[in-house]
Image (cartoon, rainbow, N blue to C red):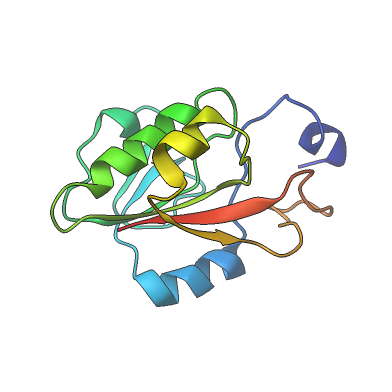
Length: 140
């Protein structure tokens, strides 16, 4: 991925850095990647764009969710929150740290555990860091 694309709105897909994912996976032991592609999935059980993870049932899984970061992000945050209310279901999200949004206050703040990341992640094979801070949101 080139930097011109990274600093534009031409994409909302940000591939999770493998080492970063591996460290989280050691802690949570993920069993589902609900929003992936066939090229970047992190779990054996995964949903692609064609499967539409927003329409799938995640009950009984420990899901790692790095959703598209565009306008659809709000829907993914709501879905992660709602799925986490089901028995035996945990959801961990990697999303931009946008604490000024309605979805942050409605579905995350005072509800989930939040880990703000120090510095900025380098997504996929990018040479430069993301133009935004990130956070991990843990719905139990």
